[in-house]
Image (tube, rainbow, N blue to C red; front, side, top):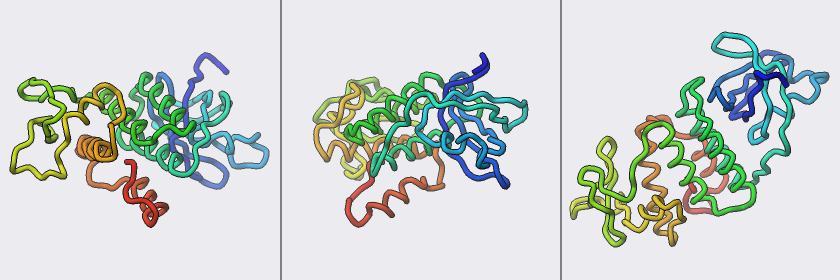
Length: 245
């Protein structure tokens, strides 16, 4: 590989013209960007189509100067992260967040490290929800939308474990009042666990953490639903009560 090569991942791919692939990449020093792998689907392409899959660490060499680059060379860097079942859908969810929220060619190398940590945890069977919550928080921080979870936003008062709090877009965390919908409230202990990078203590605290991160992500994702949430309900709706994301 040349000095211009980057370590990265395929976030998404689809067929392009008769024999090529259009891929969305997440690369060191480059961030998210689209590229064409010309002829990658030809039989004599040396297995490039098989390499250009999500969750496979890659060395990628890119050419061209336009909005869509040309992938000139690709090599595997070790084995792919082996995700299956619910962990696979969680991996696709993380990819979808990156596709929806990252600007093009805006480098986020620390976030790429966080992404690999999340994939590794999903691959070895770690509890899915804490893995997703940690990554969602890292993503919001990287984009400048992060929030201190151990204090009330307006007052700076410390969060108390036994009190309830509400998140409001553009305002942050505040103490809950008697008129707030209890389903939108989050116990202080849940916030403290998230701030300390720890897993919530029980299923109810995990539900609160999931609802909180959904609320924090929603203003930036817009109204278009996430495809991976619909897929989760399609695959598991009859067997599980809720999506981990």
